[in-house]
Amino acid sequence: MRKSTWWIWVLMAAVPVCGASTIAKPGSPAVAENSAPAHPVTRAQVYEILRLTGTDPMRRQMLDNMLPYMKQMMPYLPEDAAADFQRSLEDADFQGAMVEAFQKRLSAEDAAQMIAFYKTDAGRRMIAVLPSMLIEGQVAGAARGQRILFAVIQRHKEEIDVAAKKYHHENPETSTQK
Figure (cartoon, rainbow, N blue to C red):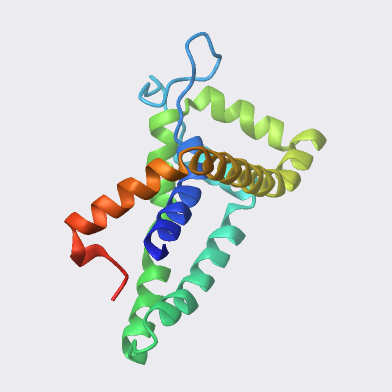
């Protein structure tokens, strides 16, 4: 049962990721992910978008949370290794990676329009509420996916139980029962 529960949580964690990795539908005004613009966004535009959208505080928070997470995962982590990890994170060019990602997908014209929008009252409100909306959407999507998964498991319970029993019989090393 423990392995089944683990797979359910893996699936639930993947639901938001799968939803975020979709590309534009045909006929949509959005550009497909693989279409690089002829005139990509400039570095200055990317930095302005990141500044306007408050990305730097989020990056700072992410970095600040990484070390405690690493220490939780590896409580035996020597202090010099933890300090090296922290310094390496500080020195990493995360914004350079963002510039590359933006340049693959956004044109300079798109960026100019985004910057103009983000400077409006509506744009500032959008920036203010977007993190909460994304979190709420992910939580709601994960909950919906979990309900669907449990309903499907319930409908196929006997079939799944038979398959699990057969699998554990054929692969005794994977069984959690001792």
